[in-house]
Image (cartoon, rainbow, N blue to C red; front, side, top):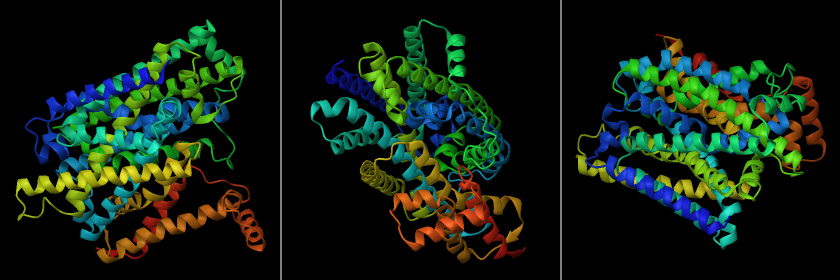
Length: 504
């Protein structure tokens, strides 16, 4: 199928989003942008959050992991579900009781202003890196399979996509995103289901027969019982639960949509409905990955990881209709994470760092001008970070995102745990140094634990490399830290806060 035709469908999809944005952003104000006037429909929010949680990484990377680790990613998904329960019944009641616009205001009330700004600062770093990593993955696929053939450079692709995202989030913010996310989630799930059906038609087999073939190839294994392995089931489930608590419950982007629902009960229904659907959808992505690997073996396609799904969908192995649906499904998976992140980062910076709602000297017009300037600035930062990821060019973006989350969400996890689980007080000025020290200590532990990887990646040689390997073996005896890096970081933060605190 021609690159120009595929690009035409992409532009038509953008046009549809702009039309939705036009009708939903009329008569919008700052309150609409930040929390949708607290009047969002919980069913729309629940459905749209599926797309936000999954993103383009799930669409491409999760099927790509099946060849190397089978269905082991489902261990993490089970953990996600447990984490959503904690968010729904521990954190959401807290946010609603305090009537928060920014969830980090809780840290101001519980600890102090510096803790509040530190929490928001870590969210800004976390969401910027996570969102741009996801953005890079999808932009790179569009570049490799469509736009390179047309002679369009990568930076132009990234710039134009960010410009279009900026256009439809510029005025309406959360009020618009609730509707665009619903539309995009629909297209993403439609693309997923039709791609599975198309590949199974190539086999001439049904669901059960395909699953049986995957079992014969040992692609359906879910649980890893090796305690030393990064994929050990207990680590994966616990890590998945804490990732959800941190990356959903302590994340302004995800909570911004939830607290835009009028009532706490409806927001909890949204959370539990969407988390149940997520279990089923992630299983479908893993099943799709198994189908892709069986298809690749049958047709002797020597491609693995993130490149497998786009290679089969776009290189003429399947019908033109499937190619179109793959592209639409892919960008539908991208935008709920990119547009929501851009809006949430603007909200966090304006409310938490600049304090435009606390500053009574600013009228509505000046606040709006500030908000628009910040929104444009974050779009530029997104562009720069996307170019940096292009330069790094890692082949498994999902691993990069989970690693970054371990470092950047750890301090948030420790801060909120200290505030909720203890009644101790700490000097506000001590919070930032502690939240800087904890990720640095976590990094040191990670370097020692994964000494072989760091030595190879950074080309360390000589006596230092040998000593590092020796220390790693003595301390960890072959145990490999994986997804639990976030828990380690959060525990270090909590411990340091506890040590430097006192009884109220």
